Amino acid sequence: MSFGRLPSRPADAPMSEINVTPLVDVMLVLLVIFILTAPLMTSAIRLDLPQSEVGEAGTAPQAFVLVVDAQGQWFLNDQLITQDALHEQLSKAARRNPLTELELRADASVPYGRVVETMGLAQKAGLSRIGFVAEVVSP
Image (cartoon, rainbow, N blue to C red; front, side, top):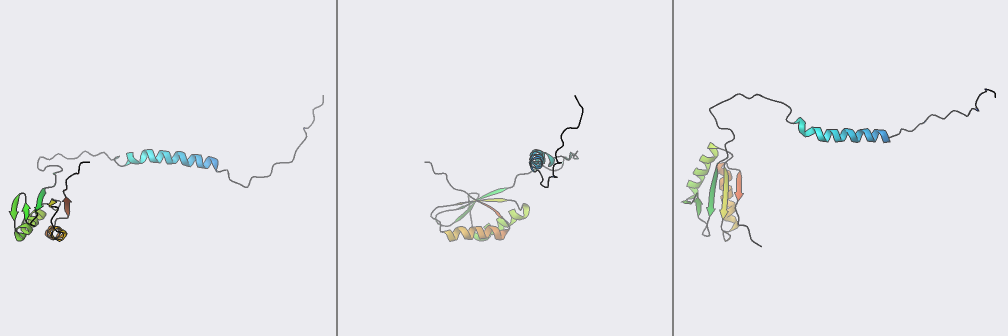
């Protein structure tokens, strides 16, 4: 037995292409980590807030119910009201709390123009939160 050299073969040529499979694997793992941790980062700051006995926290916005009946008359909180008095009441409410909600209940036979006029009065008074109340139709 002789110890000689193994037959030699030519050296491999250098690779000129990038193998993207490991890169894609790493990027997908990072994406999953980011998706899982992003919602947790929004409340990462811990605060010790001062105590107060003066104000109420999170007061609910005030709401008015405005009804337009079939004859086109306005009722604010079930009281008949004129256009000038309605504008005055809505302006006062908007000055007290600009987030006051107006629940508009209009009869189905009221012309669309009267509903638009009512919305215009509310917006002119400074109320921008207007909700339309309707009945749910049973199937």
